[in-house]
Image 1: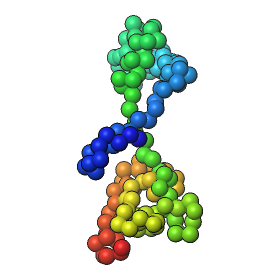
Image 2 (image 1 turned 90 degrees about the vertical axis):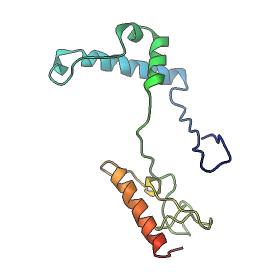
Image 3 (image 1 turned 90 degrees about the horizontal axis):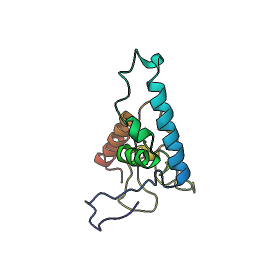
Image 4 (image 1 turned 180 degrees about the vertical axis):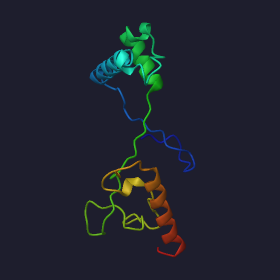
Length: 143
């Protein structure tokens, strides 16, 4: 993560480092090409209208395919366990059950990063629940 500004209202610039090595790019090209090949088979005829992009020209050129992938690549991950919940005495724990960061007065974390493992279902509802529980604790004066 890189800081773009000292202004706390400015979102951070996050560089995930996707496809930063030649091996990463080679493997991603392989995945895209195999996927395109599979989608083009008759087995997918009932569930797919066929490949819309990248076209044959892009699929056949490593440089063009790398550019296409980088232009379409994103993330949908929900990070869990980066700010682990636990008691003050636990050296691995960063927050308490109310989202309060150990050793930092007034700072709370209220998202799925406090979970030790990802939830079994989509984490969006879990993230909302965590936020609501922490907000409720704040409203009740848990400081």
